[in-house]
Image (cartoon, rainbow, N blue to C red; front, side, top):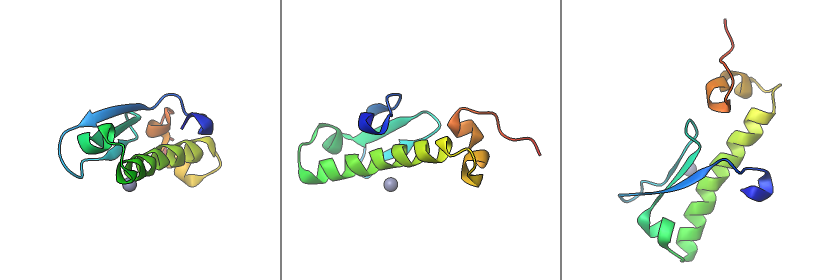
Length: 83
Ligand SMILES: [Zn+2]
């Protein structure tokens, strides 16, 4: 993620199976224990997948001309547009 200019996303270990997700409002990668601590190719794949969500969010937020960026104001750290 740092090579994509993302340095403000934290990784968290969470309980449960299939609990891996990216929380855009808190900028957290939540990884289940097997994936957070694991070294298997599957663990790397899931972690990379979730990191991909963070990269997608950053690209949407950086593209201020995008309708998605305008409607994602709170997630992007901006105020929502008023209607
Ligand atoms: Zn996903």
